[in-house]
Image 1 (cartoon, helix red, strand yellow):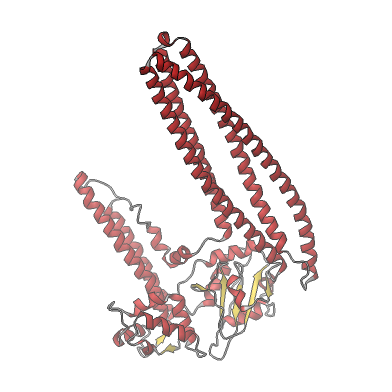
Image 2 (cartoon, rainbow, N blue to C red):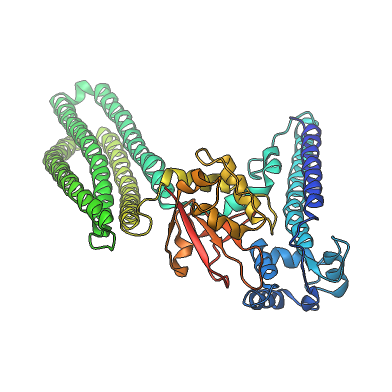
Length: 543
């Protein structure tokens, strides 16, 4: 793609997204929850003052607290930059009026003003990234013009990380980029990517060293052949001894391969064992729910058998590794003896012809250096492998422990497949604030198995519907179970759990969100899981 065609395509995509954005904002102007915040409290504030006022406002027991919470969710520093149009580090009165006038009323900062701000910030980021990308392309064009009279074709610089698709997905790019991988994702990366890559590198190091040593041995053979008549029996003995050393190396390499295979099996068994032992230790059989107790007792019995089998497999692999390690020691002892014999032969050759001995000694020294480098490189990569294996086992145990806790606690009936599917769809958001129920409905409608929207005016009305108390929502309610969770545990809800906050004197609509399983919640935007709202809450998990 040429530079001009790339720019035209990217500009078109940006233009389309901005038009869509403006239409969305226009539609949202009719938002019934369009009360206003007296933004004059920010007058004269620098960034630190602004942060302090937001934190203070979130603790207010008034209707304004929802605005402060929404600003915090959108990103305090980004919002400060939105207010501070002239970038002088202070929010001035005229800047406040400009930010508050989107809905036609510059006296207060309304939800429509806030919606416009949060969506505009996303597209400002697109323009900023676009400018950076364009600058990179222009620099590339100038360089190419110098090198090849400007005839080169261009593609996105590998360093930029951007593509036209980035623009069309701008609404959820930042949220997804900030998402930390969960334990399963980390484990999968270590076991299926990092460890195999390290083991492959280990084999490549050994193979490369062996190939280099073989070439050096060929050089030794050439020297001996060139001087066959002069060396006579000494040359024959040298060749024979060198061949015996090579056979030792071949056997050592073969045994190392066997050990590597057993270590791979061992790590797999140890990881599985850590998982099962973590689950076993976390399973409770003395909960208040007899059904849970009975199910956990049965599961513990199953785990005991599996743990026993794994320990036997681990013991067998450890014995195999030990046996081959002993065989390697035997070959290394033989090799050392042969190397002593070779040195003795080389001394005799030196007495007969110092020049030949010098050539042989130089090649042997090069072989020694190759072996030493191989040993050091393998040692370093083995340490990396050991570290990764330890991390994998710890993650396995963490996953197992969580499974045991979930089975024993309020999440005993949690359906992880449904929950993770719902949370995955919840990563794509509208990028607004004040439309939490609409955002949750988008995710429900897009997730197979649910497919039904909660058609209410206020988020709080979803409580009765998910409890099965509202006609027409029986099927949806049957796919969720209400559980009792302490406030301090809300941030560790499993993926796909729905939290509904009731009304309070300062908020007539309530709030609803979907837990992403990593301490964040999704509604019409993504934010840190709400835990301190001054209202009653209900938690529903997919079952």
